[in-house]
Length: 263
Length: 129
Length: 98
Image 1 (spheres, helix red, strand yellow):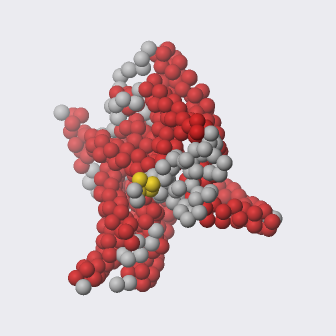
Image 2: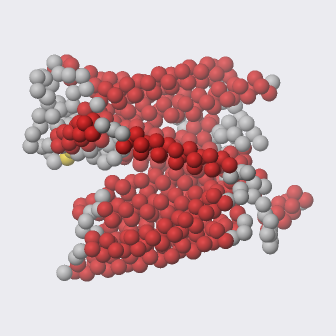
């Protein structure tokens, strides 16, 4: 009888796959060819050094689509996430104020072995996440992936030690919120600064009818990826700190509820 | 000339390591299915992680150094493979340890076919004395 | 020297052995009577998947796949730690004692 959930899951999964296949079969060939033309345009122009009219200055086409060709979508996604986390932050901060600091007795955490391994892996995760974020315009990855990877590090510390340890390490509630807002501000700055030169919003490289010469794409023979590098780093800060804020807020809310519940 | 020989040696040593690792992994899989309870299966998991994952990754790092397909990226692939092998050598024993700790402490897994339980004896003596 | 030629038969051959091990681990994941058994088998699966990704990166000659291997090995560890924490404390990071 305990196999019933697995069977139900398998049936639902098969049904979903079949649905996707059927929907794909009914797609109009006209739409498909138009989509293909768009893909060909992007692949042809993303890193076309010989015809720079529509190029993005980044060898990674996915990041170019995310931050250049369809940049507004990503900006809106970031804004939606920011607004969603804002509610969480308000709740968490209210709980923190009601508790008066929230520095209670720390939990004992797990064994010494896990704590030692966590110390080593914390540095490894930090380096990997920054790498993913900063190389987002050359390799698969980018700000969102890097930020999500970064969030694993405090999560690991929460599990191996306690949430108080994360706070003591410097991920304080208010400073995390400030860094997150600073990241969003930097993002807006990079997006809007071409307007000063009579360019376009979200402009990356030199475009027709624009006074903005574009962000630097090369430093000697080194790729710089135009605005994508800065946008990725800003997004990394925003997403990483948002995850930390959500963990901390859940902790404080949980503590407040537990404190009220048990007396 | 000497480069070609070094590449050949790296390739064959790497292939040997990967093959040995695959055999280790198969043995670990058989152990994982056939061993009677969780605490015995920890042995199989250790073989699967250290012999079946870290060793082949070292082999892949050597093959990547000799690979002509990867071009200038082969040093990067080699470094990431070695780093992953090192990470597995840190994480696999720690993960097994903490799982065993939790399973033993909370009685989450039955200790049914038990030959000798030194830890229980130790704990009982500690409580007694 | 042509490593691509050697790898074109070597990687599928080794991958088939790894896939046999995968199947055995999956048997344990499905049958595993308790939570630690399932987690242990999924750990082994993740480590093997890291090897699999690295092998694919060699086979197709694309260096970017290999980043996933590192993350997979870290992910398995985090999975272990969280399940253990769940088992020991029954609540994550609340630090509210035993």
